Length: 258
Image: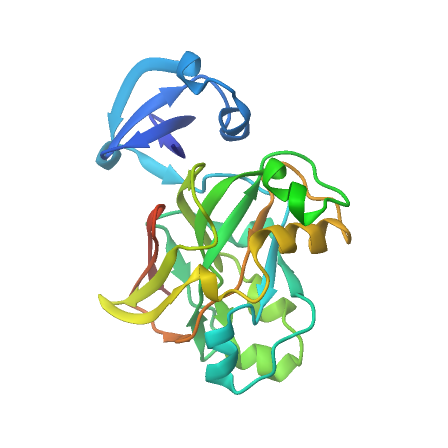
């Protein structure tokens, strides 16, 4: 099922998304993910997607991102495969939702797109084994790991380049029933494909990532792991439209503004 968070008449709501219709639920996103029978949470209120404002599907305490996690991306860059995941964090203030604007910071002259599969945690996870990781995953979403590439090169580390407000679009929904190891992932810039791959090309799969990260830090319900980007990363400019599409989830569309 697809769980979505949205605004209607200035009120924040949670719902089930199907065929461009949203059925309101009487609970939070995380409660819906964890409910053994979400049908009992349904209200008799149904909205058209076009009549609501779509919000990021969760409000995580942190977004943990993975660098260089696709074999085809490593080949593109002529880089050796890492022995263990390379991680960094985006702050919650960088998060925006579907159809929101990515703001091009005046301090950068090269802002890049990076399409990624997002893993949404459904419960607190600490020292989790990979074989148990699925029990802690509530679902999957699309992420754009927006990066000020020139500042990344200048700083020699990633915090500033990855952390600007609006630099972490997430959404439009959480798909709870998805095999994360076999999904097509792509990105279009102004309607033209720039990235195309499949999650089977990941170096470290989502379950291995949950194990690795949860042995470093406690993952909280609603936290998001952005699992790395495939080849084809490139710049975007003011006026561009960026669309991340992941099979089984849908499309995350944003607009670059100044």
